[in-house]
Image (cartoon, rainbow, N blue to C red; front, side, top):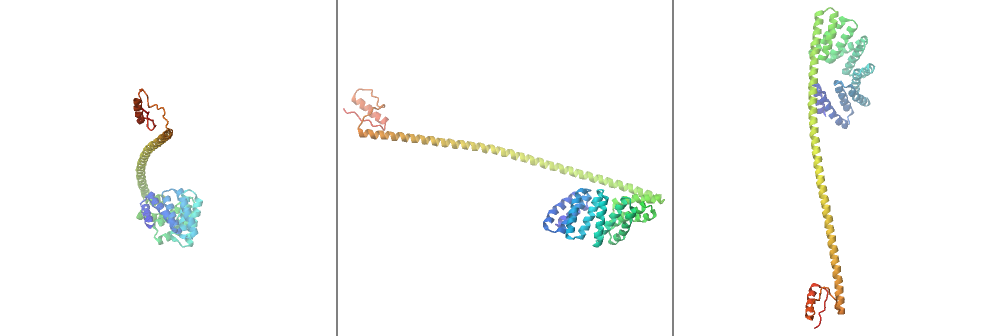
Length: 366
């Protein structure tokens, strides 16, 4: 199981989310059979997170909800706070501001109560941004300012850069440009250092506007140029990545289609072979049946003939026996009397004895 999780994490690190899901879903039934609910809730939350990275929030939602239910039943507070945070992000992307804010606050309460600082600073950052994106920067600013020292202490550089950006942008939206400037500069430096390029692009834009208002035109122009260059670079990378993904999917689809075609061809050949075998077997069975019937008919016919011969022989034997007792000389059709002499007649009837056996013919006296 740890091996599957590690492989999934590696694919996620390199941005191959399809492969990440493949290994996460391979692990899911194994974890379900293990009977470890805490581990199961973690896997479910990871699946939800992968779908979020793929921007498929409708698919991410049920896994986050299932994870939350398990963690609450098991009193797994770290897992509960993580699931609440995931649900807040999902509802934020779905444009449901109130639901998102509600889940972020719930995540903040659980993490504060249980002293889970890592999730607490993430909740603070998300609450701050939620208010700022809905034109309430003054409400969100305290959350960002509160989270900055906590992120610094933990060394959570990406979250720290987000909090600095959020606080600086809030000051800018409130027209407090001088207070915004140092926070935005710090955010730029951290994002550059750790190559958080998506976030760096957004900070460049806000910092450019702030410097422009403050009259620092060269700095504003520089930030604006960096913003455009980075935007173009990220766009080109996205196009290239999408092209590679589409090409890979196309080749995979081609291979799958070829496999299905070969399978269909093989199935058709097997079907035709079974049909031919069926015809051959059917013909063999029919011929065998005819042969059996013919043999039975022949046997029956032979039996009838034998019985008829036996009946004739029995009848003749009875007739012969009765003639011997009565010394009766019958008129025999086989003794064709053609001559008048007694000798000739005797000779003829004697010959007829052999031909007309077993009928007894009494020779005539001289």
